Image (cartoon, rainbow, N blue to C red):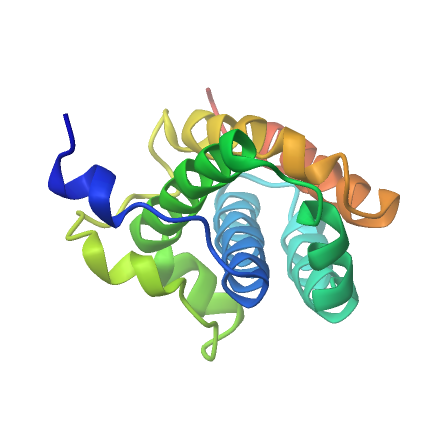
Length: 165
């Protein structure tokens, strides 16, 4: 049975995927930045900002293209689902990403999500971001090690800057 959602789901092209990865990283860094400023350690807010810029500067379209070049139809369906997750989480935490980069490019699909803005300080925020990061593993493992490491480090900062959680 084809629903409207199933009919509209399509794997992103290379440019869309790169933009979605950059947006996801930027909003994740924005959440880490806000949490570190609120709960500490304060230096982690600066580290989050720098990681965000470094990730954006270093993730090339060629690297993303290489990561997905051998995907088959099943992989593309998984990629379409991941693109949905990236769009959702980016829209949910957009304000935190924009606090680091006002010109952040949102995934095109984000416009489909009329979602309440999430708070960097909610108990489940880190878990939500970590779930999406986990979904990305089959793409991430094909990206350069530096991109993988930057995302891993950012996730650790998110987990450390939890406050009283």
